[in-house]
Length: 256
Image 1: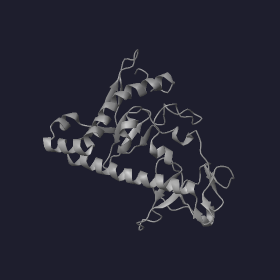
Image 2: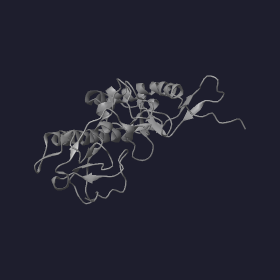
Image 3: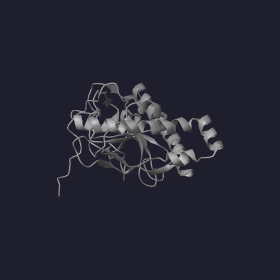
Image 4: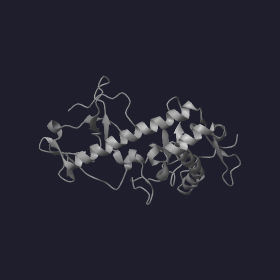
């Protein structure tokens, strides 16, 4: 039962193992109302289809680097998530990104040469195993209805990922992304806290776009996604306030 070789594991995943009826015929999966794997992450991958829901709770930003991806910002500092406590309890009435809900499963290539994606899981989790509670993963040598539902969800996630890549390609094509910077002035602190290391849509470049491009984006739904991102940035100060309230705010550097 060796794990599939993975050089760079996705966020959350400690290991990956292909699911199969030979090794996991009697295994079960169980649900949970907690997400301890999420607690130490301040940014979570997001698909563009989720922008309208996620923008109600989180700032939507884009990662830095050559191949940026959309991210839901759940904290401003590394290792801080203001929506999940130390026990993994998620705050009520927030949108939980599909990337989080997918765990511990995902679709992955079993070898770099393969074109086929296989359903895999993180074997280090306690949500899948040789226990008797929860839903069986297999019905004989065939996937159970529960596993078929998981597979369907993962397939939908992959399709949403391709749409997200197309969205990012459009932003890159028209050079709309810029390095982001935000300064937050906390009461009683002389110097503002400055946050960098992310990208955002350049509104000046957006205003300069040709009318036919904007019209096309309005018709195919890309323009509302951009506005959802821009409007959501106002929530960054709310995230900062949550950090301070929870005692997770940034530490003020001592005066020289």
